[in-house]
Image 1 (cartoon, rainbow, N blue to C red):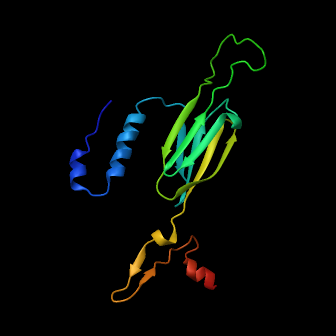
Image 2: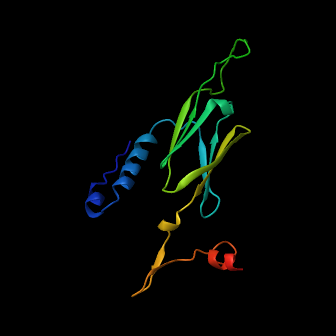
Image 3: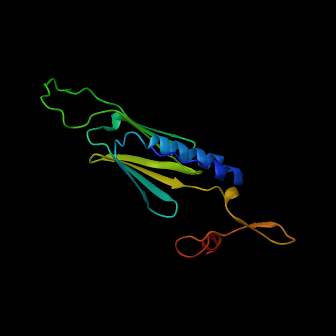
Length: 161
C-alpha cells in the first residue's frame, strides 16, 4: 500500500485538516475489500446517486444510516438455506458488508430504493441561504446574490412573475 505524506501541505494551509484526514482515511479503507461494487453518478448540479450491486439481499437485510457527513450502508448475512434444502455448491456471495461514504457539507439522503439487485440512494445538496454567496456593496449593506434556476431566471424574478 502506498502512503501519501501530506505534512508539507499541512504546513502551508490553514483550516484544511479535515480534508487531509479524509484523504488519509480513504486511502486506508480502500486498500481492503471492494464488496459490494458501486457507482456514484452526478445527476445535476446538486443531485447525486449511489448505486450498489447487492444481489441476493432483501430490503430487510440492508440498513442505511445517515449521520453528519457520513453515510453507512450495512448488509446482514442471512442463513444459507432458509427453505430447509441442503446447498451442494455456494457460488452466490451472501456475506455481510459495510460501505462508508463521506458526504460533503449540506448533502442529505433524499430516498433509497432496492430493485433488481441494485440499491439506489439519491442524495441532494441543500445549501442554507445563510451560507450562499453574498455580494458586498462598498459603503453599504450586504445583499444576497440571486442564484439562477434552470430556466435562466433568478428565484426573485420567478417569484415576481
